[in-house]
Amino acid sequence: MSETIFSKIIDREIPADIIYEDDLCLAFKDVNPQAPTHFLVIPKKPIPKLSDAEQGDKALLGHLLLVAGQVAGEQGLEDFRLNVNNGAGASQTVFHLHVHVLGGRPFSWPPG
Ligand code: DGP
Image (cartoon, rainbow, N blue to C red; front, side, top):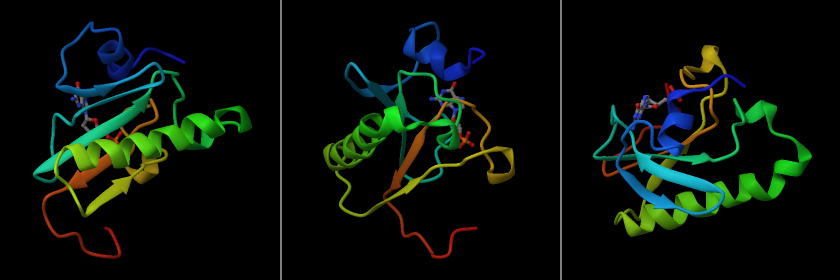
């Protein structure tokens, strides 16, 4: 996989407002927030998009969701929305798997 802006954040080559890190993943504030609270949870493993994940990534994917919920709580969110864009046609722009976590405002359904 070619290097992305997110692998540079993992490697501390470019700055980010990192709010959580462990051996498997990183959470940091989105540079272009779409809600009062908007952060991203990314695996350190460079999986380009969700549909590239494999059976061996099962525990990692579960970990990303658990971390998303835990950090949302730490950020003071009770209600929040998770979003994963898979592919350019679904508005994915950075091809390193990431879970958007948004909160602090009402969300409508269905999403746009
Ligand atoms: P997506 O469209 O799902 O690929 O979302 C990519 C998100 O990544 C988008 O909401 C903006 C955010 N983003 C892009 N570049 C940077 C960056 O350099 N730093 C941070 N913190 N966020 C970024």
